[in-house]
Length: 211
Image 1 (cartoon, one colour):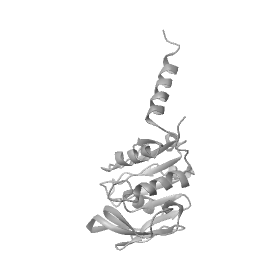
Image 2: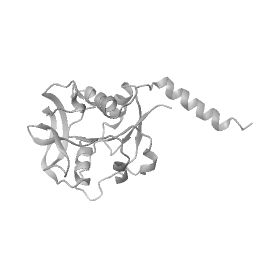
Image 3: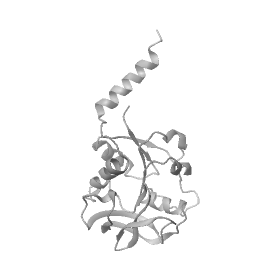
Image 4: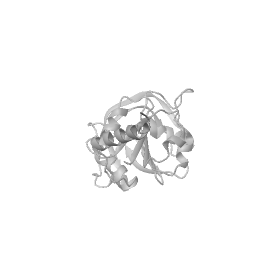
């Protein structure tokens, strides 16, 4: 059975693009609702929290089953996902009056997530909220001219303020590759044909005893 990465979709316009990038890196990507219980995500090699048009400061903002952080698998929060991680673990999130949208410069720290990535990269921002600090026991792993908390980490829980999945972040695919292979330790054995073969086998198994 192919390894999978679970993507929790909070309504981002880029969620399907995240899945596409993961599949291009030869790993199965499955998209789930924020309401998906933790037990249905068990078995994933890693979890990605997508961006969102919501603000985490809004009362009805979507949140995942917090027990996903007890699964022990690597988690990567992107944009809203970063802010969500910050809020869940005790950081303050500021609802900015001015949305940051467009190109920015990101300065990564030394970390497996940024292996082979230059010391300064161009990244794509699309957010209205930002962290005013980091949660307890987290560390800063990247900053931009507008935010000193644009990359955070605690053990295998990561957050990025920018969108690595878009082409406007040229090093983004390398960052996702590092997340998959260096942090989630995937084998990279998934292909579209293997997905179809698995689906056919499941159908055959389901109906093999029916005339």
